[in-house]
Image 1 (cartoon, one colour):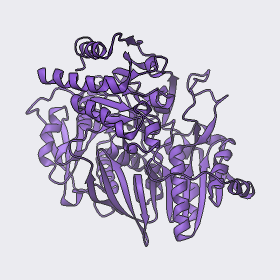
Image 2 (image 1 turned 60 degrees about the vertical axis):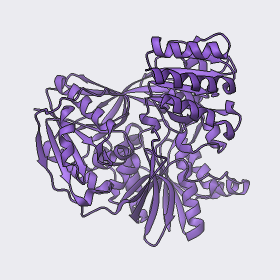
Image 3 (image 1 turned 120 degrees about the vertical axis):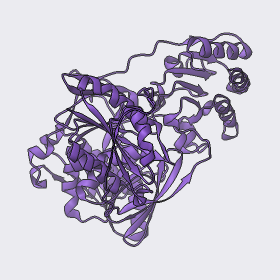
Image 4 (image 1 turned 180 degrees about the vertical axis):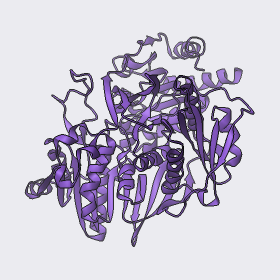
Length: 258
Length: 326
C-alpha cells in the first residue's frame, strides 16, 4: 500500500501565544515548533498499516524551511520519504489553497490512502481533509478513532457527539485521525539516525503545476488579538460547608447560572 | 435580494439545536444584509421538520427527503447542499460546527469554490460584508477574518449563538429537492450510541471537569456525582486522559474539546495553559483546588481553596437540594 500522510508543523501546545507587530499573525521568534499532535496519530496509523500490509509511507508538508524538522520527526518515526512544498506563493494561502497544493503533490503519487490529522492545532480549522478529498475526488472519513484496512476498502470508526459511527469506505480515501486512534511511538535512536539519510524532496508551485490564481486566498485574517482577560476571581473563604453554601448562593443569585 | 443558506442537521428525527442556532443567526444577519433565509434539510422522513426550521426564521426550506439519505454519507449530503448553493447563489452559507457540519462543510466549500471560516463565535455585517471572529490556538488568541468574494461560508460553534424565539406557523415556502445519491463511496454502516442521557461536552450548558487533584480513577465518581446533581456533562484534563483514567472524548483543552458552557466547574485541575485554552470562554468558571496559587484561579470567577474530597460531596448534596427547590 502506498500511504500519504499530510503533516502540519504547529507551535507547541504548551506555548504561550504572542501577537506579531502587524497584528495579524503570531510572533514566531521564540516559539518551539512541533508536528501537530493529530498528525502524529496519522503517521503512527500509516506505519502500523505498513507493518501489517507492507508498502510505503510518504509524508507531505507545506510551509517554510522550518517545516523540514517536522518531516524529519516523521521520518525518524519510520516514514520512508518526504515531500516539502515550499514557495513564496504558499505564504498567504488559506485552507483551500493549502488543499489545492497538497492535492497537486499527492495526485501523481497514486496513493491507496491519504491520512491527515483531524485538524491542525493552532489554526483549528478542521478543513483540509474534506477539501483535499473533494479536490482529489475520493471519499473521506473524518475524526477516525479506529481504522481497519480490507481489500480495496476500509472500515472506520468515527467519533460524533455522544456516539461512534462505523463507516465503510472504498479506497483510495482520505481519513483524518482523532485522538484515541493510537498511541504514537517515540522515534528510536536508530530511527533518528536513519531519518538523516532519507531524502526530503522539495517542490514549488510551478513544479506542482499551480498557478497564482489557484492559490489566491478566499479568506483573510485581518486581525489577531489575545482574548479579553477575565474579570478576576472572587475567592470564597471559610470551611468547606461555608464555601459550598456561599458558592451556590453566588451561582444562583449573582451569576444566575443555577 | 441576497440570500443566506443554512444547513439543518437532523439526528434521531430531530433538528439538532446547533442548526436552530444557525437559522437564528441567519435571521439576525438577514436584517442588516437585507437578505432572505433559506435552510436545507437532508435525510429520511425530514419533510415534517421544515415548519420547525421555518419557525426560527427560514423563509424557504429545501427538503431532500429520500430513503437513501437515511444514513449519513458525506458525498451525497455535500452534493445536495452544493446543489442549493449553485442554484440560489447565496452570499452567506452557515453550517453548525458539529461532527456532521465539520465533515460536510469543507467538501461543499471545495465543490462550490467558497471561502470557509471554521468554528466562528461571532458574525457582524460591515459594509454589506461579513466579518467573523474565531478563536485560534484553541482560544489562546482570537482572529478576525473576512472573505474575498462570495459565498461567505462559515461553520458556527455550538452553544454560542443565541437561539431565537420560534414563531409557530411562521409563513414559509417548502421546495422539494432531488438528491444525487449515486456517489457515496463512504457511508455510515451503523451507529453505536454512548451511554443514554449522556450530555455532549461541546453542547452542554454546564460542565464539571476533574483533574489530577482527584488522585486516581477510583475517585472520579466524585466529579460524576456533582455533574449528575447539576445536570452537567463530565470533562477532564489532559493529564488524567493521558493517564488513562477516563476516555479521551472527555478531554477539555487544546488537543481535546473547546467548550463554552454557561457554567464550568474545574475540580482538582491546576490549569495548564492548554487546558485553559479550551475552557476560558465559558461564561462562569468555578475552580476548586487545594493550591491557592494554581493558574486555574487566574481565569476563574469563583474560587474555593480546599480539598476536592471534602468539597465535592458537600457541593453535590447541596446542589441536588438547590435544584429540587427550583
